[in-house]
Amino acid sequence: MAVTTAGRGRRRAVARGTGATLADRLEALERQGYRATPQRRAILAAVLGAGRINVSAEEVCGRAKALCPTVNLATTYRTLDLLKRLGIVRRVTYGDGRGVFCANPDPHYHGTCLQCGAVVDLPRGRIADVLEREQRGLTDPAFAVVGHRVEFYGYCDACRSAGRTGAIL
Image 1 (cartoon, rainbow, N blue to C red):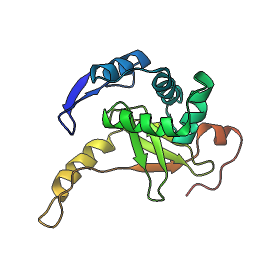
Image 2: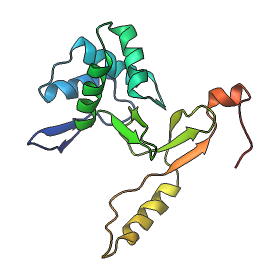
Image 3: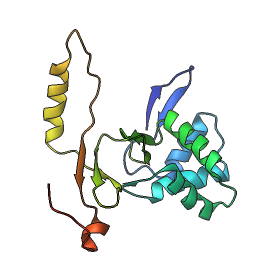
Image 4: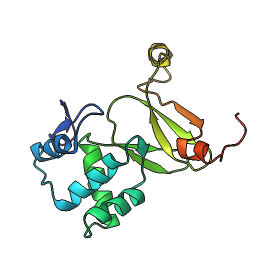
């Protein structure tokens, strides 16, 4: 469990590692003074239940509603924003404005399915070291590089299994 500082004097408790359980993350939430309400539990369980697939707020709401019928979209957005601010989940935003939520707080890459649009967590490989070295060397007086994002494109397991793949680019 890592603790960092967040805005407005709050400490940010992050349940680190892909092995962090629902209980670990709820504990991180409560350490920051927030109650683990049934709605928050259901929303966090919905994000974690997606596994390596990153999910939209609407998808999270649908999954969470099955666990707690009082969950609605407004509660889902507020809770996801809180979980993001506390470092318990990450929000990944794309150029087209689409955003998905990721339960994996560790550095990793994303793969986007060209057929269905699913966003899947991918482990970092040897290229990560090369990119980090390049990133350090890119900073100059005109621009200070502080991070990077790499996204891979391809076909998810479900689309490949169903034979819904196009030509490889």
